[in-house]
Image (cartoon, rainbow, N blue to C red; front, side):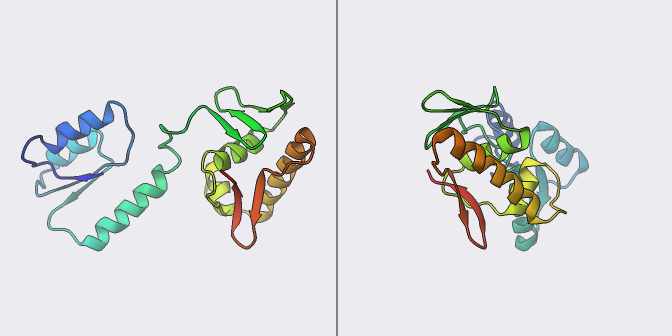
Length: 180
């Protein structure tokens, strides 16, 4: 969300307060108010960034892209706690994965993280670097083989529990996905 502080019916600060009551959507304030206290108030109220006018549109686009990259994994208010993907039920809170026939699959924390990430974004392809950054929660400095090994173990466990059903697909040269 990009908004100005000085708007006709409601100030941008009031909008930020209302949005923050139940949503963590990224917010950038763009304003002609350049005083430090205005910036501080906007950020303390809940804005993620504050840009003063006049501004370079390319800078604002760069800030938007940066904020979306940082917040993408955090804005999961719309992701349910329990997901059903193919023959699996995945419970985020209890870290349990159960087949539709009731068989529980024991996964490591990293395997669960990979499965939940892919299942919560059906049909989206994630590169090995993206998976590493989101699941390990650090910048990807290792080879893609680390992710590949974890995905391989995860596939083996799922296929063994489901009688050979494939849940995670490889998109060659790109990454991994789960069909929705």
